[in-house]
Image (cartoon, rainbow, N blue to C red):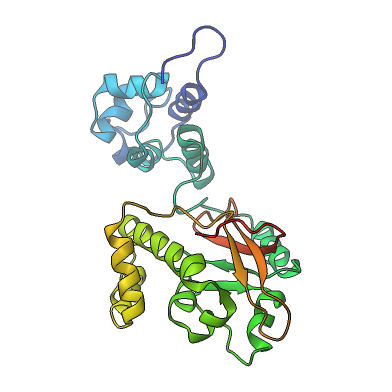
Length: 272
């Protein structure tokens, strides 16, 4: 990231400069035993606290070099930023919240997202990073209650292991299982989730799934998410198979959570 030519300096420059100027943190976080210097911290103070060269920190503050993501929390600590300012630093430097979300999500936003999900007239549910279903609405629950089936606690496990999924999820192998396995492969390796690794181990107890997994594991294809994919849901009581478009979104207050909505569509695009 090169410094701007003319005009205002990069946003990161003003942010870090002000953070240094108004630093009032504990003495042990500075390079000076006497504690807070008059006028706040110097660039050298911050660099020494982080264990980097003064030149490198100057380049970060000046917008000459991007700040590596793995350094942002250490920088926030060196400057003794509160949770709100830490979130601002992450957003300025990376364009988004920290991977675990903002430090202090607005409780009204949290409850509003839940109300929004429940108010949707089409099947919708919220899952965490391990695909555990944290919230679901009436339209989703009706897919199970009307068939006398218990609502699942984990979306991934339901699609892969439940016998009822073979009936509810039309074209189960190509439209659902294979793409979910591709996503499982990616997420298990990148998140190091113990829960997802257990799912992979359990696949070996199901010959059909074990064969599908071997094909996915040997392939170069993965799936980042299921957003936009068209699948088929077979109503449990009467009715014709219905094409639905899978829409995936995440609230800003918790980017690890995914809200999955199955929106009826007239399109019959390939679901694989």
